[in-house]
Length: 181
Image (cartoon, rainbow, N blue to C red):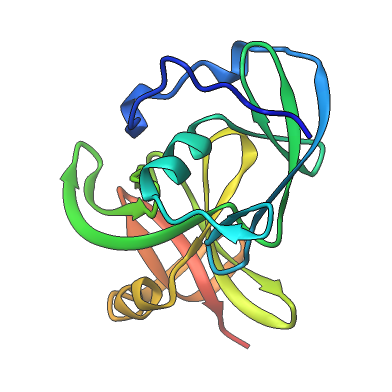
């Protein structure tokens, strides 16, 4: 199993992401790390309890050809992700240049603005419809149940290229979440 060295990494924020997209290290094998469908991170069977460690690992997470990797300048190791590697835990309305928008925050302190930094959609996971938002490098975040229930209160009638029904409007962009039959 590979040991990832994280020298120089501190508790990162969305604005201080390392340039993972510029790194092209050799593949070093699989790491016994799993991100569960509920957003919890496990290493060698034990839950990672320090949220700062989860945040540091999330900053070097890379998605390629349907697989997730932790990447440093010198090595790349594959990890397992049951559903989405990120979980949206809070939300609020904010003002943007494009109008009123929904700001989302993940468990790893990534801040996204719906319609600016990300899009939202419904998809099936183990026969359950779940809401997701797009993240960096082609990854996605599951919208937590409590957050989704809060967003449901903001649903309004929308018309999009995908059809008509109930959805969200954020930063001037419409998202269809429940299509009319």
